[in-house]
Image 1 (tube, helix red, strand yellow):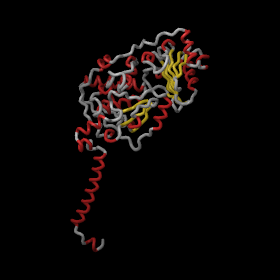
Image 2 (cartoon, rainbow, N blue to C red):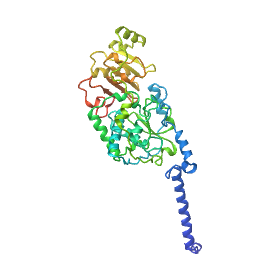
Image 3 (cartoon, rainbow, N blue to C red):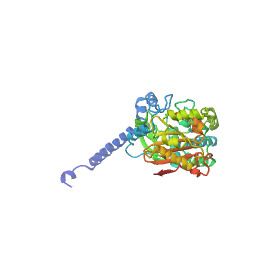
Image 4 (cartoon, rainbow, N blue to C red):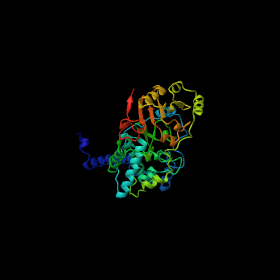
Length: 400
């Protein structure tokens, strides 16, 4: 130590060190303030009016406006979604959900979560857990209702604007196996007990990668699970401090919510079509050589990438899959919806709920040439349960 340094009083050295520590601490606190760790900076600085205004104009906020733009063909939607990059940096997981409601609330919440998980994600374990996490994130966000069933059925009274499509498109008519219900309820109970599905973080929005909502590029894309893309709001409203509302129970009755939503008649279909009109329909759409030669009624989407098919009488499961592969040709995203009852085949797009409920097979080929196949096992016998609609396990994904 130099002679000059030795002459500096110890009290001054302590003062200098204390000043440096204070500056560093203020810097940390400023960063925490900016990121909303102590609450909404705008609310603190600008008052409750500023907070409510910002909530009202959040992109994709529930309201009268439809969530999804007018239909894009799947290939265009896939390309647009691929052009939106995933957010950089670590994904902050949500806090464990703390259920504080009554036993009756827990029963209603479990049913709402389980049904939503099955309707939105099929039998996929990660898919169902991701959907459940989004619901719980919404319950704790001030932009959404404060109950689980309230979040699930928000907007279901409208033909457009429902937050979970299955609550307003007729899909509530669909029935699930006991095994499927048991598996979904188990996942719902685990989430209510504090299980956190970390990959989706604080996501409050998601959609399949073959649709493109107007809000998609305005939110942070955080994850992909199966064919669903997950998003959180940008800025403060996508931080842990925003997902802070306390759950206090008061769940509406699940059965009453389901019954008040208009459910399409699962036996309804388009008017029966006789042989002459069917032949005219095939001629009008170009009489696809593949479909005509196989005795199938094939209605392609006008923009390509999708087909509606009335199966040839006697077609088995393997024949139906072969038909779908033939139509798609292994050339990127393609979807084939098939009906054994040709009178149930819709005559155009979009597919009405009544026809969708009578569908015999769904085949999806994604842009990485992976297949997802699902059967109505009342029509196709001997199919493994995992490939049945509403089955207990994830649908098979194959790489060709």
